[in-house]
Length: 363
Image (cartoon, rainbow, N blue to C red; front, side, top):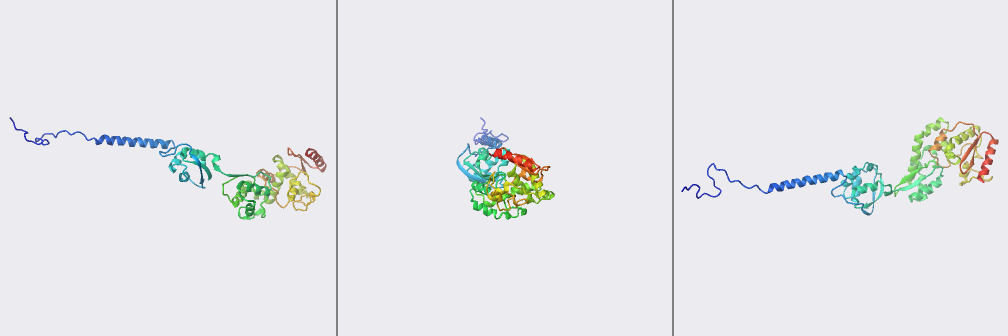
């Protein structure tokens, strides 16, 4: 019997013999599984990003009430940080992702917003785009309002006191009042709708109204256009303020022509609106004694224009003051106060006939 191989250790092999085949380690299937999970996780993350979401984004509409402030110039990421710090969204990235999928998010304005805690980023974007979430103090100034009425309205809208606003008006020369206004703000607090943030100062309120006037003046090229008509900018604003009271927009240019015709003829303007301003009233019928009021604004007693505007004129009135209609009229009468129907005359006799119509309609 051969002794070949007898006494050899199990791992020993004869020369030239192949080593025994080993079983593969179990680590390889684990690595494959881990790689698969990583690929799946990346796909989920990218999928959430493409949908404007985030893997740790809050869900739903949130609850409670949170006030946040967006500063002028804030980027979407800066807004996101503000919301995350306030607990509105989970993180800035979630907000940026949601905002990037909604083009309207670029229109988010600076201001104070009322949002909710733990909102999904998409819900936060949607709420910030809802005007009702933005806290504003709205001030509406119609054309033809006098300064005292504007002051009262501004105080009521902003929560400031009338004394604070008046104090700012006294500094108007440093806040944007044109030099040709001769230091008076009457007529230069522009009629418009203003949105102010909570905490607005009286200087900011006055500055906004003066800035809006200056924008209109620039668009009309007021100073150069006034010079071309042989008038000063202050005279143009004064005429425009008279138009606001004496006529409707459709007749602004004709009434402007009457004013200029009477000035050229050396006739007193005889306007009730200027006497009303002098008296601090608004009356359709002035008494004989009221028409004798001693005031530079009494255009029955004084020839020429009053010293300055009697209210705040808007764009249409300013435009008409610069571009009066062509005509030879010397008189105008609002024959029907209810409809503001205005008729024009070149003779005194025709004027008296129109005046009778007014008296009949006014009752």
